[in-house]
Length: 356
Image (cartoon, rainbow, N blue to C red; front, top):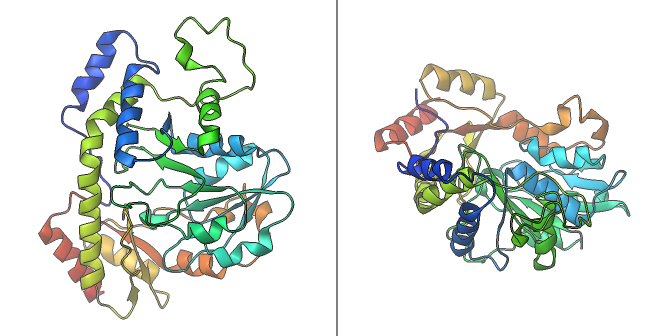
């Protein structure tokens, strides 16, 4: 069976984990600081990345920094991992669903204006499959934009496209860069200090280990910090992340150039895309048939994420018809495109897709 996902783990990751365990200190410490330094150098951002224990936590922290409260409204996309929504829901905010491009899966800026009210606090836009949304258009509404970049790793963006105001990355097990689980938030510069305070209850970790009983907490924060075990894994994996992205891009370009089937639509090549997953679209009502066909041919395929607006806990937010989401949900399937695929496996996948 050709796998759709696989963990990329450095061979020496276990050594640094053992080092941390033997040190007697496994909380947020020197390894977290070292990992943040490496991330800052790798990404080249103006703000030092704020490590957290998941991308879900990064999004929730961003919502808190923006000031989302009960009764406020958050514009989001239903075509994503449900993790994109849980922060807004736990803050008792109202989610208003924007539509998406039916092929790329990215948020459609033209669907935003009708959703904006005086209660709108933020927009959460997801870079589906590692393809950047049109953030220049999304930011033109003057509302803070949270960029869910869980599908991305930036190694060649060169800042030639606009990004969100708050960027959230995932280091979950099967992402380009894994820490076992974890993530980072890159907030605006003026929010960096608050982000570092709020990720650990509201306490200032720079004041050493004796601060806990004496330091004043001005605002209650969260238990979102990364620990040294996770950071150690990240330190060993970060040198290999770019190689993984380049492999995913190369494999995805091979699919775009070679898949040819009247019932299959593939998105156009995106020069800035990370291509964590590769989405294609099975048209003419044949999606379920395609899923079964690929399984019979020992190729693991799936939609990866399902639309969030049809869950029991989100049905109250449904209001407008979303034709882009409808089409995407009815047709989208992800095929394996990862770094582990051999040349023969790539050719086999293309052959089976073309013969469908």
